[in-house]
Image (cartoon, rainbow, N blue to C red; front, top):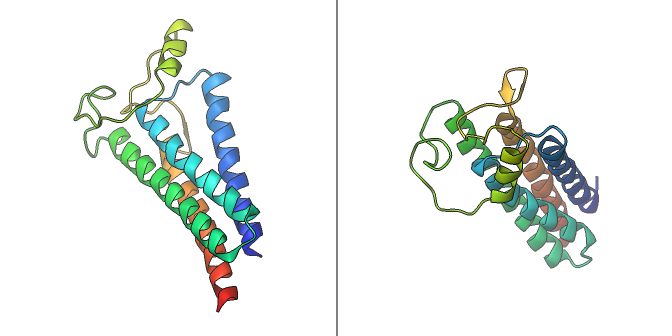
Length: 164
């Protein structure tokens, strides 16, 4: 598989993940908590990096943007792992979301307001509101984000091999 195909696969799979998150938010009414939003930041960077790497014709650009994609997906996986620990009560989460220590990063307050207006409970970072086979969305997101990161790293590796 070419580096371009690997980057496109990472961008497409990441986009499908983002679409699924929006589906759960807007169709199923599961408002994202603060940590869910943090994961979306890394996902967005990963998708954009992989997409630009796929569209770039120069080798240096492909390597640079492919690496940015991999770093974005790694950041998503790290946020999801942190969220997993908060959900599983392995460590405290942000006090504004779960009663533990707070980490000052922005999140989407409009999603919380929309949930409240629909009579849905405000999501807490340490509650698991959806699971599949005993794994929460954050748990699934760890594995998927690491897979997207590996696709970007493989793409970078393919580009670099051509250079040599």
